[in-house]
Length: 115
Length: 292
Image (cartoon, rainbow over all chains, first blue to last red; front, side):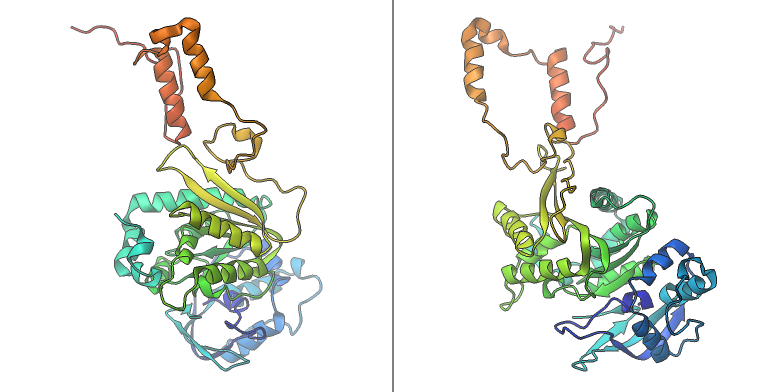
């Protein structure tokens, strides 16, 4: 599960089930092609605090600022750092925990299960 | 062979064996990819801009790969673990989520720029356990799809309805969830190439929204591919045929078999069924020179 996917997922059957907490995760890093246009388009769709929270839970080092910079579209260093955490960091095993009901959903082989 | 929906629930039917078919069977791969291409074409996304798309029932990610080639990023959901595991092995770029679409899609609101689904939503018409209610599951699915889409985004869902009642049930559920749009039927004259696409628009009614034209339909230019009988008047074909017979054409009105007219007409009807047919030329239906 990439962090971009995690940033979109909400807990089933719960209006306030976002963001899902990540517990006991093993992380892999996979290199993928950098697409500046796509990443800058994603910035508006992201929940920034949830992304920073997830990074903290995973203990992944990053160079992201605490808030989105104003002129992010031209800031290539920022976009590259964002690209790395969004699509190159992959949670392989672990559990997602609903912040409201504390229900647990497993992540197996890189695929989160919400059933 | 009976339909897969009647054999077992999706999470069981799409087991290891079925997943490997989607990996090795070139015909299956080709059909899936061509349907995904057609669905993507009907989404009418702005050219050259990478979009965030949702693939409902992504399976082994065959449809997702078509989206990747066009430069889009996608998230796929599926109920079968084996299919998703195969997708993961193949190293698809998109995100994969194991989820039951009948319980709703669990994404934040207004995220996606579009959604596609290839041969998946007919599964919702079947109750697998006593607590499943197809009507309810369809309603939950379409309501959550509507929420997950950005206002003004489109969803193109290809599916295989078993009978007209299912077709009606699925279309009505989508409309009840607030979607605009309707059904597009490609190659309506062919039993094999015929494909149903539910083309939906999320958000307020858009005056610029036009339904895509169906492929291989009569009068493809009228923008009404669903063939729901939106004609202004009814032609009485039977009567005119009778007139022709009475007008003295007699028995010779039939075009003789293997004549040029007959061949051209036959090619035309096969073209309508979506088959690959050679263009007409001056050599069409000409007999070959005699050989000794």
